[in-house]
Length: 234
Image (tube, rainbow, N blue to C red):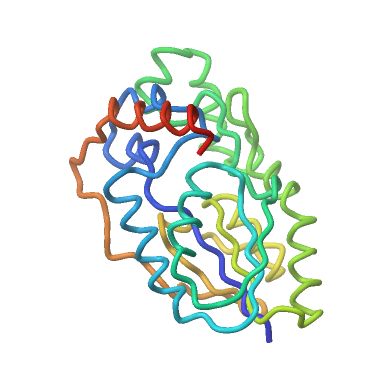
């Protein structure tokens, strides 16, 4: 049997908008370029790597193109003991949350008064309502369907012992839906790994490293990191 592991990237500065209500995080980078948080995000990626050292056999690694995922994958796989093929898949990118990304509710309402209607819609219909200038949950569900079918075919071919997906919370939730055949209302936490088996899943790893309540991200330091990465094409 081919094992399927779905991994959510480590903690990012953007996650602190909802986690600790920090403002100004959108200044760091757009969604696709948001890096791992320097302290806690990178430590979570290292923990993921220590878990993956126990994986054996030929492995296929699929990953979102977004920077935080690529950084998580690079750190986690740096000490891998298995041989693997890898592929970047645009379908695995996170839900496009438009103007909502990396902003607190207070920031959103101050900048976009019309967002109140969207927030009310999300409360009433969280799957069908689109974020302002973004996607809906159903858009992501439909977007990941083909890659999910590809994963199922690869598993059935027995070419690989393992398939590891480095991705995001929403995209991985809908991957689970298509692979298992049923909706499981579970959003992976940062650094969490679930193993999908048949029509069920189980959490097999949760990082011990967690950003503490009240933690404030150093916005300027992360802005400089993004500039450096972009300048050096990292």
